[in-house]
Image 1 (cartoon, one colour):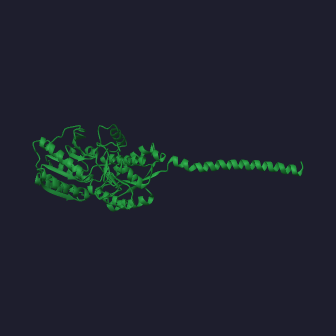
Image 2 (cartoon, rainbow, N blue to C red):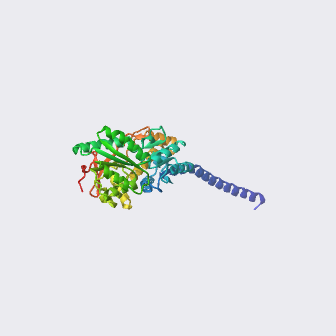
Image 3 (cartoon, rainbow, N blue to C red):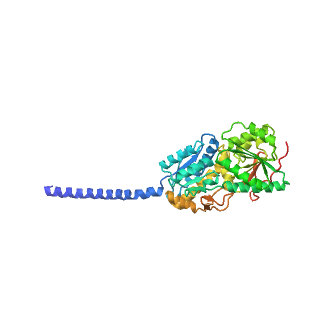
Length: 415
């Protein structure tokens, strides 16, 4: 082979190799260009702050709240947020340590971590502080439980509460109390209120002191106590001395249980214990562990819709895990579903777009006995409580009639 022939063959081979390299590089380039679209289609995780008081005086409620949030996240992630390419929720857990200060510190951490929204808070005092802190960052905040109406009357555009607040709950409770008392021939005329001294208990006591006398009830005494409180003997001694027809407790789980047990031990038995947002009054845990103390206690509180198959399925799932189906569970479960619905409709994890989606929400995929969802100044106008009563070893709905599974027993039978 001559020199020129060899050179020509080498050029042909070089051109062929370059052509193959070009085709390969073009394919790789096309793949590289397509990669972002693929990543977008798969959906990047959406960070959500889950804020609960999982240590301190309110730790049981906080832990129950986490149970509900976790179950909702599992359900949401099974299908993903479709408008975000099937994106999964990535929870950022925070412990408020049962204090407003602890809650604020967690909001700061969550904001720094890049969450697009926060759910939780539980206690009114914590929620008052944390929603305000979140507002500084235009960070959407869905309150799981906190009932003081100041949470949603301060004009915070970032704050949304799916459940009812003080005003609605107290009005419903008083209306149902009057209905029940009238049916019993006005058996109850005098009342004592026992409340914890934070925003929740103090606010409710103030409201009751205004409204109950207008309805013909005489308030004999209003007793406040801190959270935690380890001894209710002196309080129960005062109740024994005053002999009220009704005792209205407003406190968190541990204190409620201790108050009820102390009343039973001292054989103080008014015509009724009628709770409004009782921390344990509508709790299966309380009924199971202290059935005699819980018997006949009534409550106006958050509750699930017992006629909703989804609610009953969730109840079975929670109980199968060895947990109690408390209001903290289904309030947080619902709050996460509400947020997922807003993310779906917003088609974005941008904070402003999530807030706009919540403002326009018509969310209906919940397990609550509510009317249509409509937020006005951050408060769901369709939210409503129910009245329950511990009868036997179960909790029955006694008001409203639409959801009732039993009639109230009032006055309670004498021991």
